[in-house]
Amino acid sequence: MKIIKNFLPKKQFKNIQSILMGSEFPYYYQNNYLDEKHKGNALEDCFFVHIIKDQVDSDIIADNPTLENILDPIMLKLKSNILTRAKINFYPNQHKHIYSNWHTDQDNNNTKVAIYCVNTCNGYTELKTGEKAPSVENSIILFNANELHRSVTQTNTKRRINININYE
Image (tube, rainbow, N blue to C red; front, side, top):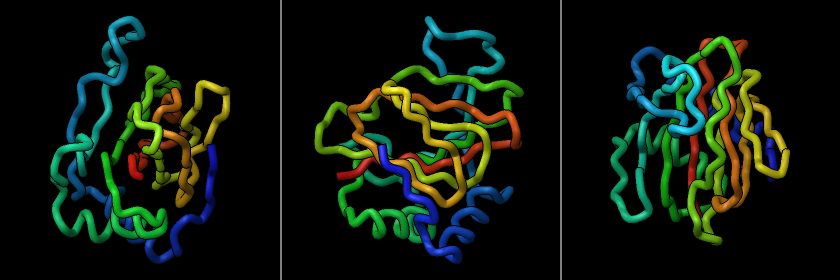
């Protein structure tokens, strides 16, 4: 795992943050965060997402302003032009840490994960190895897509927002 702080220039970061934390950006309700064997209180098993590209072989489904203002600056800095999957996650405060299931984003050895943190909170990303990456605004967390990891929600802010990018 590698963490890069102050990943984008401040002006680009502030633009992305203002769009994604504004009241007009659309997020879509997802009824499941945990699988059946890990479910606790069903009321806690939800989050919101904005899909940019859903699968390796699918088309990009985001509009041009989303791509130009949000995804392009990150992809350029990653020096990648092969996007396999991308989504923006919005985790509401559940008043306790909720741990997602351990999972991999892809089984491909060539695919990398970049989790770009939009806001600072006490939520984090954890690898099965025990490494933890805090959610710190304008930082990016990098690791291989075939590594087991999980997301942990926050308790100290109304929301945790990050951009999950799978790329080569």
